[in-house]
Image: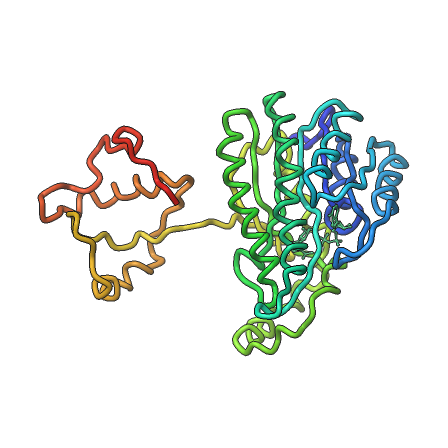
Length: 345
Ligand SMILES: NC(=O)c1ccc[n+]([C@@H]2O[C@H](COP(=O)([O-])OP(=O)(O)OC[C@H]3O[C@@H](n4cnc5c(N)ncnc54)[C@H](O)[C@@H]3O)[C@@H](O)[C@H]2O)c1
């Protein structure tokens, strides 16, 4: 396989002054990318500001012969997002890659979360990603090429106690990435979501108070850390990131997990389910209870890639399901657009 290179490519990496973002920036620059190193320079809980974090990474890239510029704006405001993208346009003339990575934690019990803890986390992770991605998307669209990587989290996709604010924000990024992928497909733009894992300074923000929840504590205690102790490290995430934002990778609309050197696609699946008898009469709650095993059966599942795939999935039953009115479900040629039906969610 040919080397993955980024010569002539311009990458924005938010929160690149520490941890994961720093490693992505160093590696992309080593492989030829011109990098905008954005970092507000605050603490692991998002307090304070400093130019140091971004400056040191830019210096390290330049010392190694690479090209980089620093940006110190916060992703959490629309003006900050615009300034970050403008830094790339001013310094390098375009944007090819945008890795939305900046963030911090403010963990607490769900019922104790304050407006301040909720707003700060939604602002940096969810709104921050939108504020940077919108102007970056416009710049990419103009060039007919782009690679977005949003940073999600296993806390959102699988669950973690005392992180309701964080999981809500990170879960939102999954939806955001899906839509950017769908709309961007017309303009050579891909978008994927990463669920990284690493011992970074964010680990220091993980108050173990969540161990008060028995079922969750059992899950924490059951984890086999010993086998992966020296692999819960930042550099294990970087190869996947480099591939996902490369020209070679045309996969889009995906969610990828990295944990202790295990790389895997994470899918949103719908079970094959149970189809109610045809006709305009909905089933009863008792019908739902009676078919619960089929509704939840994991044996067969489907991966809808747009809202409308849920409709076409009904065609699976066309040989099986004939309603009381004799109409076979999922007749060939059925098309929501054709009959003027769009889904309002
Ligand atoms: N470390 C993990 O195991 C893990 C797991 C899942 C998701 N993540 C996510 O990965 C990303 C990187 O985390 P990390 O572990 O490298 O943490 P980190 O604290 O080492 O790095 C995050 C960087 O973001 C910067 N930042 C914070 N707020 C900012 C803002 N408003 N504008 C610009 N920069 C800002 C910080 O200054 C910091 O340098 C975060 O989004 C985090 O939620 C991390």
